[in-house]
Each structure stands twice: as structure tokens, then as C-alpha cells.
Image (cartoon, rainbow, N blue to C red):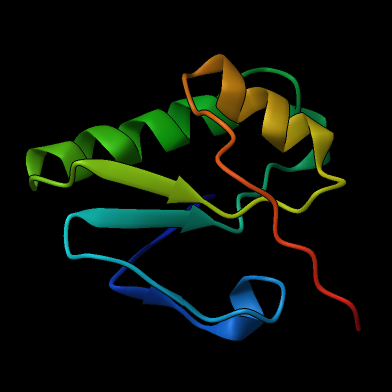
Length: 92
């Protein structure tokens, strides 16, 4: 699965930092693939389908929140065209 949010993300879903952006920006976070299906491109398919649906609703930008240590997710997103625009660190 992959969750998309419009308008804002609550702090508990983005490393303790609440986020909000303009109306034409959507957010994705909390992607998950069952272990037996990982590495087969399913998360890319789900993410791409969601992006296409948002584009049809006139969303111009998609912002992803990915944990720093989640290398598979970062790689998957890079493969479908996402670019790293920054880094947020949080100390607990």
C-alpha cells in the first residue's frame, strides 16, 4: 500500500514534524510491501498509479516523506523520477 495525503501530514507520520504545502502539492508516505513481494516493482506500480490519479486532479507536485535509512524506498522512488530535495533529521 501507499498512503497519499492532501493539504498536510500530521507530525506522527513525518518523523515528528507536521508538514503543510500549497493546494497543488500532494504527499505520499507509509508505503509498504509484504516481504514475499518485495523487489518486484509493486510499490513503484502503486505509487505511479496514485501519481497519475493525482495528476488528473491537477496536482502539479508530489512530495514524499522517506526515512533516511530506507534505502529500498529511496531507490524505488529515484527509479520512477523522484529527486531528493532535502533532508530532515529528528532527534528523539
